[in-house]
Image 1 (spheres, one colour):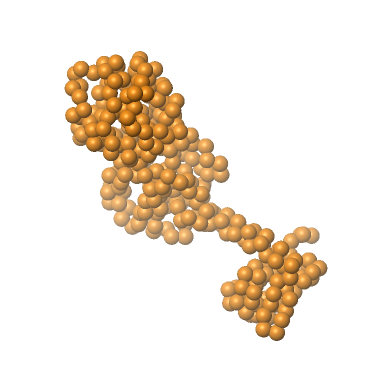
Image 2: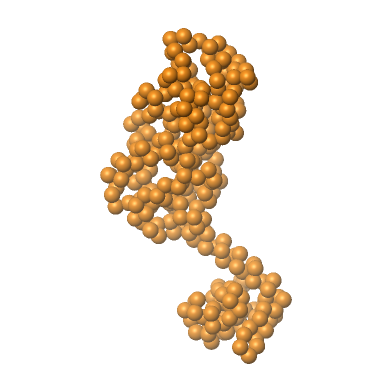
Length: 295
């Protein structure tokens, strides 16, 4: 025998407790007011206590009813979140992709035209956000995350292996005179993100020169801002290749010395497993992995 009352009774109690009205609960559930009353009476009989004080034109929660209402509301909200994860294709024509702002602006958006040409029936929405999405009622179908690939409860697929290399504006100095010692004395702009601390040390070791604190002129913790500072000629920075690839090809930025190191974090496609099965997510995954492999 279950130690829980019937689901319909808990639903009726939820809405009646929320509105303090059997009539409002009936309208929300699309059943009669008499049915709501019957469901709640069944709840009370099951529990052996009164949940409502029934007055002439209103109802009030008893102390026991007030205590139970919070648990019932929380329980239904958690159920609704779970159902949302397993019913991912409510709007098959709209695809929402969340990613970090730097990757969105410097890699993804410049390449989106080809996706829209291939899949004109899909309305694509990009959400640049530094906050991690949880896929619980936020409408996000897929996330592109920069991390270690460990996202409990979600499926994670490797997308892009990132590397780090020094880049600067093409007019910062004469490229023919570059040596590690000269490089160390240039004004440096530092990515202060948590994953970059060990990479910064690894880069100096590979460079064969220590970059003194006096050379560090600016610290930032967001990739787009760092790119803009480098473009403005403020100095040289150890950058993610994906963010500066197009700028290097155009000649606006250059890599003054042939040194690169693997990034500690990589890019991953992340979503609940059920969302990866939808046609719109499959289309986007096929397109973006094809783009990465082609480049």
